[in-house]
Length: 68
Image (cartoon, rainbow, N blue to C red; front, side, top):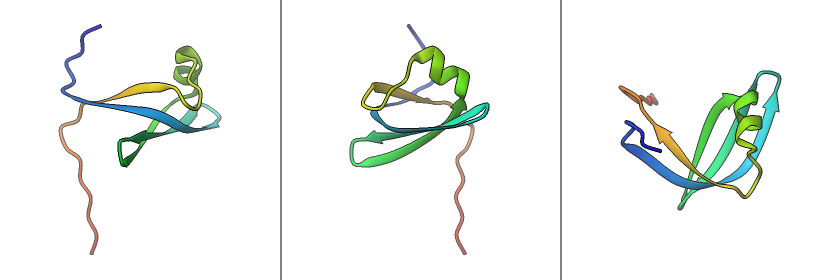
């Protein structure tokens, strides 16, 4: 499978918190922590489980953080 996204981060699922239509999937990516908000349906379709190896594909025009 090929993707246009250039930011690909391999990681391991650490937790999955489903709440209605959405789910928060936490990944360990090396020494870092990445959180993805996806549909609960996507979690089900991918059959995601804690410990699964996955790749986070990130396609965004910008990522902004600010702290006064």
